[in-house]
Image 1 (cartoon, one colour):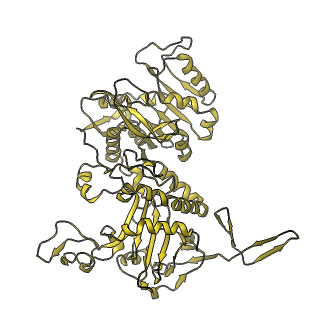
Image 2 (cartoon, rainbow, N blue to C red):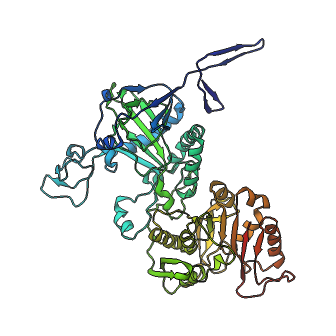
Image 3 (tube, rainbow, N blue to C red):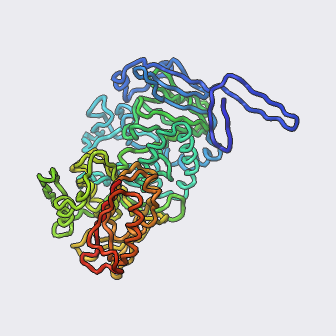
Length: 596
């Protein structure tokens, strides 16, 4: 049974057609069988992998799905989703616009599709190539017809483009990005140069995001949370970061390497003219699906798949396929924000490069604290002071211990010392830092000490504000690197940084502990969060530096302490005399520890 209401989709299995008449009006509910198909693998994963780069004919497949279906596969007795397929769910005007927006760019040859482009073949590369040096490979150096050997690797050219955001550098930037150990997330060239056109396709991407959420709510939630941790590289608050558009291209057997390993991808097709074939096949299961104009396919991109031959029926035809997904490595990126995706204005190019500061890799080994780290710092700056305070003097573990059950939200990441401490204790951490040079060093430190660890970076300021960006007032001089603030400071230069609302971050994450050292921005957050909020979000530990240099009012501080005392069983602070009106001591701060 299919029920369509208010633009949404809800699917029920039924074998009956229901027709109900009333005296005043007629209600017709159209019912339809949605096939639920369980398939068994016909070859092993290794056998499917051996097919990579090859083209599978349509007669290999024993079943072609052309109607609505939910397909699952048997994995040692456990049923796992292969696909949800629904016919004619994408409105025609959206598809027509998508063809207008992407057809020209997708017609340009790309040699960046690797395995999906097939085994290297000189006839699919350049007419100036005589032969390849590595037979049977997907990337190879080549010999040109003049006898010269390329000093770079070449793949087959296909008609394909990407839009949105990507986690690999442009070819011209690749050497510099990799040689400097930088995380190379970027806005794609298409989205950079076509802001209004990009904005016009966002409604279609939001729609398929909605369908994804309806079909697989738990998986969508996990993928959306991950994407939301890097809003700079998230497509319009969806579970996606990237869109690939292919024009009349038959893909070879491949898996979508780099996509979120526990998530799904969406495929759509828009057409002009007529053609046959182009089925999306899953060779391990001996079945394929005929995705045509307006259809919606939610699929597991980590199963081997490929297209069958596309056969023209009319001389001119268009088969644009749209694949929308989340690149898992986006979560490792520490970058400057990009402007709104909703159109208007030119997006400044983001190459993933910032000027490399003078860094020294410094041992941070404190056996009594069970810490053995190597930390990148800027010599003769506050970086050394931060290491001493956080890692040597143990400022954040004075009243409780950080352990492996903690999931920390670290506001004020700086160069990553608290995140390194938490990770050393087995905790997970999402660390937030808006300033680009600190971000760069933060990323290097986490990647160097805990590659692939339980951490993510949010390159943004976190406030109670709902604005997408804020001014950050930078410290003067070369020494102070940890007192940047969102509060106006006379004589300081400013930069625009991404801003994320604290409630959005707490809602999207699964945190049970919060650390704040954000130069006064903690005060409005502490005043804004209610007693119920701490309970709702599951916060068990809270530690923050309270900045009296932003407001020296002790009554204001005590009102926050009073509220926290209603939630947390332990609230500890020092150096504050409750009966005084103003804080007059140096330094103008105190650290507060809370647990419940």
